[in-house]
Length: 329
Ligand code: ADP
Ligand code: MG
Image (cartoon, rainbow, N blue to C red; front, side):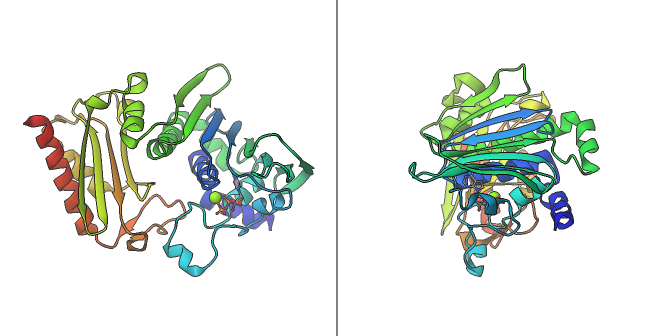
């Protein structure tokens, strides 16, 4: 069993950023409106997440760390109608097999008992019932991948791990404006990022693009619809030469994904503003009927397939062109 979990850990949680993604999805699935992250050494020494979601009961707590113990997938049909993020029930089991995990949780019903569990390398070291005064879940993960050769690899490639983590965090921050996020890196640094809950997507996007000033007037927005498809594009006219200041994000039904051809369509169509290999920031939000999108392409769910990719593509190009017209005229 533990061996299977360790193999799975390599597949599902191939790097700290993929673990972070699973944890953020769980907190959002639990209806959290506040999420606090703390990462030390890019999550390798400590990766913690505290949320104010609906929590777990003491009875359910140990099941959260068993393989395929998802509470989210009820029928086969659900695979095609993914309203919640999680559906495999493997993330927590995987991480518990290759790290030291402490989880405390309090269900929404404050009269019910929550609890605390400590698991290291797949062995439960502590499981107690306890009650807290506020609802939510806190998960502390220490010494990630301590029993796998992968650990060394992630310790060596610090810069790329940090940028993968940042990209992952921003991708959630961007499409959940109603949630307050705080992110703390390492011990000495204070919060490097705090995004308080915002009214709408544009305000949140401006918050991420421009920092504290959050100038929505510098954000160009354009939207196109056809049938049940909607494409919204947000971009900046200004370009940014420093690579770390370029936010490029594609979302499909509020899920971050990567797509080379859509990305190059953006660069190509925005080249009136973005010249000579420079580029500005963009966020694209694509909404399709849930059954017309395949998100189950890869265990990390980073790629999606659109049933009507031609519709998506032409809506995107039209939206960009109309966005440009707004600025130029
Ligand atoms: P999945 O999300 O696919 O169900 P996970 O391994 O990510 O599988 O989580 C297992 C279960 O643990 C979830 O189904 C959920 O019931 C519970 N859980 C995990 N994280 C949280 C959280 N932050 N708040 C409440 N419940 C949680
Ligand atoms: Mg999950």
